[in-house]
Length: 144
Image (tube, rainbow, N blue to C red; front, side):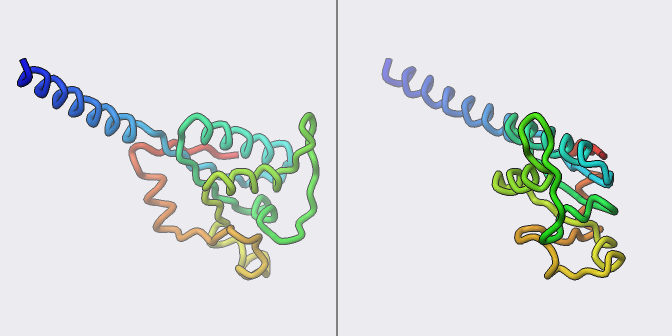
């Protein structure tokens, strides 16, 4: 009888480990690319990204073109209804959740800026890394 209990326990532990592995691999990966200069569009991109994080997704944000301005120190902020949050506030909330936020490689040189001009914690994307993320079979790409 003891042997069956030990066997049952071993099989249960193995199944639990396999279940955890499957769920870890099922975690969706999202790449959110924001290019729009529209504050509401930017805000909604961050809101949806934050909700995705809360629902278990791994999220990475890439800011390009006019949306790159969000990454600059001292950028003007527009608060949106109904919560009174600006896109920058939402972006900072995402970063506090461990989300990587980067500007595209072309943004800084074409805006006449350097990495020193970026808000702390925001990086400059490396095209090979972004391409790899885009091509990964488990990545969902959202553009705003």
